[in-house]
Every structure is written in structure tokens, then in C-alpha cells.
Image (cartoon, rainbow, N blue to C red; front, side, top):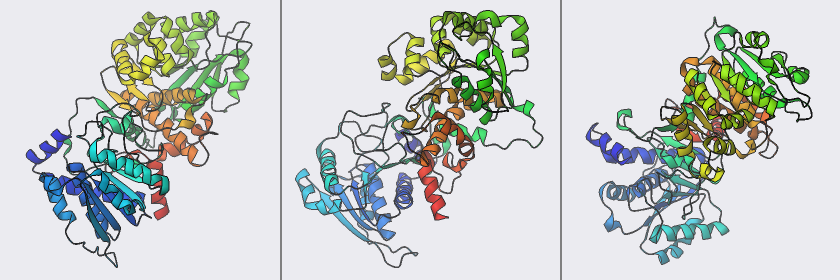
Length: 557
């Protein structure tokens, strides 16, 4: 970001003070939009540029008619550059906004030492605290006045709970941190507004107290050409644009692919016919033109009952109800594979020895783009040579949870979780496959070295069946967008989480079922595109909290 800001000023002629003005305008807008009932606002300002953003934000809020207390944590004489200019503007008289009948009130306080904070306890009696102490350039841990301010805010929260908006990042959280949680002391946050582009912490970190609270990226005037990153990491939500392009009026079912789902057990080995059924339903709901579920013959009637649109195909089973290699004969396979465009393999498959023979034989002959999940992944972990062969002849997408990823990579679950990005990307590049490493902040790692991070989804998705739905949505979108498989997979992951988020809006995280998300998939497809790309009324991108923002807009209308 330092290089971006420098390039914006030096190459494109935008003064750095204008960037600060734009950042403060964005922060003030988020205050007004996300906390519309806040009348008393306390702004905590550091002595760097993040503090300068806070000072200008405080001035704008006072001009808009709010009662603002701005606390500078440090000596004004030590301010320099844009922060010094922001201090001068903060101390200028309040200007009454045209739409206000009365100007706001502004109090500027200087905190020179930690013991001074106790004198200003009244500032904690606020409707909102704005944290603008340290931002992108910070290196942990917090110390001195910033750490004392954190302890002061926490002590006050025990008596006066107040929401907190973080400017750029919650103070104490380093921008380049890729972990979900921080061991060092950090400010809590109920909303975050950052500028120009997300940093690793914004997509990997649990920055807010709840999963549905806003994390917003606001443009402040830097041209796209000035935004350069060598991380090769991007946000999965941006791929939603792919599926929001209207279909051609002359389209027919043949234009949107035919997904074949293979999986399931039915008998004494365990009844897992629901898994391929959910996968098939998700493929249908996500827009595939046709879907066929090839399942154990005894389960055919059950799977067929899920939807009349779903086609089925019986596969031979052993006495325990597991699939066997008897189905691999040409008389069965040739008509089964005819006309199919994408394969979803593994949901509910089981790991019976007979099933292993079936799976290895089936996948060895497969030439279709394939999504492999569940027991299909566990079987591939035993046959790395097979996986290598598959990647040579078709597009392969693997959707492991951390345990399955550990088996595929031959390491422990703890090692996977300690370096999710490195493990997923390394495996994708070595094997030539797309890896969807599930969990909070699901990763989509591509063999060319790119990684997308997903920010949709909620804890209610930690239920059986969620992975089966994801497999179906991925396969369904791959069938529709064979020319852009990478973005199709990213969009599928984001849509799945967004549908679950929509489901929770009318329910509860505890009671959410996987199929509840399926019933909200249509709303996820129609979710306003302006939440995910510039061109919105304010140009913001909502990494998190888009549902809350949409509800606020709906309330305004």
C-alpha cells in the first residue's frame, strides 16, 4: 500500500493529502450508513497517517451534526506530513452541513501519557468509537499509549458497551497477517473500512466480533495501474459477476451442460444415498442443463424422489450395498457416460474394498472434467499415481476438508491448519489440480499459482451435507462455464456460503441444515452485484457484512 500510495502521487499526480481526504470521507460515510443512530462518536487517533484519517473523519462527522470527541494519543508537536495537516483541519471551526439545522459539537483532547486517559472517561459514554490509532504500516505488538488505550476501552466496555469501527484495520492487527486469530493484543471491532484494496488480514483474519459484521473496501482515488501485488491472492466474491450475466434468450438445456453425479451406499454398509442426491440437487439448482445421479440400484427410488427433474442410473452393489466393479462393463459405462460434460464423484461413496475397485477403474477411464469429494478423496489419497494421470487428461477439482487434505498431502491436520495457504497452493501446483480447501475462509488454489479466498459462509454450515452441496454447485457451474473453470469454481464457493448466510437471516446458526442453503441459492444468484464490485452507489466492495448493508438499504427504501 505504501508503494501504491507513492505511485498514485508520483506517477498519477494525486496528492497524498487528497487520498487522506478521500479515506476520511469513506470512513465518515460508513459511520453514517452502518451506525445511523450514533449521535455521540469518540475517535481515537494515533500520530501516523491512520491517525490523520481519524482526525479528518472526526471533523467530517462534526460538520455533519454529530457530537464528536477526538482524542490524539501523542504530542501534536510530533505530527508530520499529512497527519500534521489533518491536525490543523481537525482544530478548524465546525462547518454546518447544508442539510443540518444545527452544526455538531467537536471536542479535541490530547493524551500525552497513559494516566491521562482516566481524565477522559466521559468519552467512553458514546454511541460509537472509531479506532484510528495504527493501520497498515503497523508491526506488533501494541505498546505505550495505544496499548493503554486498548485497556482503557476494554475497561469502559464493561460498564458502557460501545460498538467500534476500525479505520483500515483494528489497531494491533498487522496487515500482512494470514492467521484467523491474533495472539497479541488487538482492538475489538464491529466494522472495518479499509481503502483501495484488501490486505491479507482483511480476507484471512476474523477482524470483527461476529461473522456478519462489515469489512468494507473503499476506493480513494488510486488508479488500478497503481495497485500491484506479488501475492497472487484475490477475493473469491469477485467471481460472482460471472454468474450474474443474463442468459441468451435463445438458450436451451444443451447450452448448460450435463452433470453426472456418482456416489452413495445403501444397505448394511450405511445409508448414504442422501449425499449424492444433495449433490445432484445442488447441480440442478445452480443451473446445469441436465443432471444424472448414478447411485446404488437399491437407492434409485429414494434418490429419484428428490425431484422429478433429476435423472437416475442404477449401479451394481455388493451384499452390503456398496458399489462394485461389475458396473464397469462397456454395456453400462458407454450409455452412462454418453453426453455428460462434468463428473461429480465421491459423495457418500464409502471405502469398501469392492468400492475401491470400482472407483479406481471408473476414474482411470474418465476423461471428463471432474469434481472429487468425500470418500473419492480418501480413495485418491491411496493412489497418487491415479490422481497424476487424471490431471494429465482433464480438469480436476478437489474439495477436501482439513482431514481429507491431510490424507492427500501425507501430513497431519495440525500441519494443514498451520499453513492452509501454503499446503493448498503447494498441492495444487505439484499435482496440476484445483484445490478447494474447505473451512472458515475456504481457499481455492489454482495450479498456475493463483489463490482465491472466500469470505462468505457462517458457523451454521458445520453440518453434514454442506460439502455435498458445494460439490454439486461447483460441478453445475463448471458445466455452464467450461471456458472459465477457475472463476466458476470461485463463484460456486462464494455462492454456497452466501446462500447459507441468507438462510441464517431467517433462522439460526444452530438450526441451519445444509438443504436450507440450497433453498436460498436463487436469492444468492440475484444478490445485488454492487456489493461485489465498484460501480455501486459508493463504489465500495463488501468482503463481509453485505447482507447487513443490503438490509439497511432496503430499510431506507
